[in-house]
Structure formats: structure tokens, C-alpha cells
Image 1 (tube, helix red, strand yellow):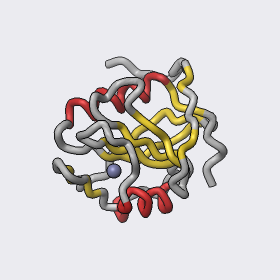
Image 2: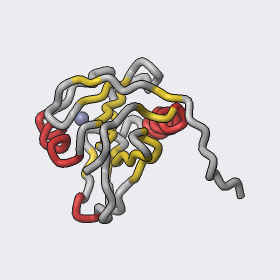
Image 3: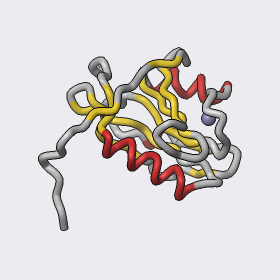
Image 4: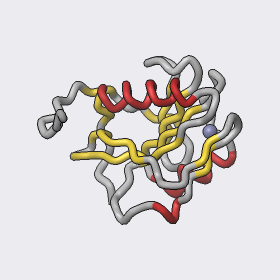
Length: 133
Ligand code: ZN
């Protein structure tokens, strides 16, 4: 099981907001990985399809790694989970981010596996193993 999630790295959140914005009006969808309880990575599964109304993630493409939760975007300011979102959250974990228009620091929310709002502090983390090529 994934350790208790303490927060998300600021760089990871910035990446999520940017990719959500550039994918709009289509939805962006991915899975979250955490390192030592901090969400630091977004994984996009092969075969993920997105449209203006939904994004389809092929969960069987999920590699055998532990997942902290999910992230996806909505093309509107509405960041409430849909029925389909809630059934996804049950399968992914305790940290599920929905980003809404206009894709800024205030237009996202995090939910636990049962769909309850939860806090997700944004943490300033230095990535020591970043490789610049
Ligand atoms: Zn949704």
C-alpha cells in the first residue's frame, strides 16, 4: 500500500496545470505516484484517449507500480467528481485531483478514495535527481 500522502510537489502541480491547460478543451487524465508520501510524478497510461466530455484510461495498461491516486481535468470550472470519477477514485487511491478551467492554483481540488474532499498541501521540494539533457 502507498504511504499516507502528505502533499504534492509544487513542480508536479505546475506540470499538471500546464498540461491540463494545453490539453483543453479535451480532458487530460493520468495517475499519480508518490515518493516518500509526496506526489512527485504523473503517469499517462498508453492508449489514454481524451475528448471534450471524457478521458478513457486503459487501466490494464497500468504497470505493476504503486499508485497514490489519479488526476484529470474538466473543461469547465466545475471540479465536482462525476459518477464515473467516483468509481475511478475507488480503484486508484486516496489522492485524486480534479483540475478545472482556468487551470490555475485555485481551480483544482483533491478527493480521497471515497470521493470526500481532502487537503493536499503544495510543498516546495527539490528534485535532486533531475537530469538535464
Ligand atoms: Zn471528471
